[in-house]
Length: 184
Length: 101
Image (spheres, chains in turn orange, green):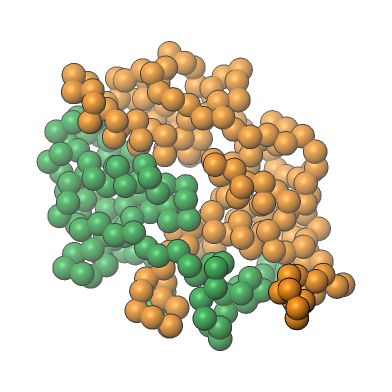
């Protein structure tokens, strides 16, 4: 994750030594670590990120300018809980290439014609494992908490934080059913 | 980091076979001489998933990766349909690949 932080690319590939296949790991996978560990973290201490918004009349070009200027992958439609992301834009471009032959300059396409997605939100304070579970279970890997959008990359930064303290606990497996038995 | 997050705590240690946790996501590949439109389509499918980026192969050797950032950065420079159909993945990919053997 330190390497990811420096390269600004949350993606690596590796081999396990058990076979010759290559496997990948990304920020989203790190949610599984967050789901498993017990820490002192709660969303109350989450750093507030500036939410970048766009207007329904904007073009894809304007949206991309905002994304690259603010170094963010998600933009919220102003006064709403709908967002657009790099993934949605790529899907829209694929659709334009297939079905909108008259559109020559992709950046001129109005975002109002794009199907936006809804960002799930939580109001209550969550522990790190709960936060990660919520994001992981969501179709869109993000969560709105108060005025901040939390993404898997934010979880990586939380896991890297010097302030994060692990809470000691041991997880044993039940010898009969295989489920986790928690003991402190 | 004061809190040591051992990767083994999530069952990904080198002493045990790959589990259903960190090491179970196979890479998705694309040949370096394929057109950009195909990478766009694949990234629309995989971006933000556990895969997130597509690994680029040249004669079965890994030469780079391509993800949403690379594609959209190039679309900003070349927002035409022609660029998508005529440019090759090798022209826009990120290299070297962050990998660990």
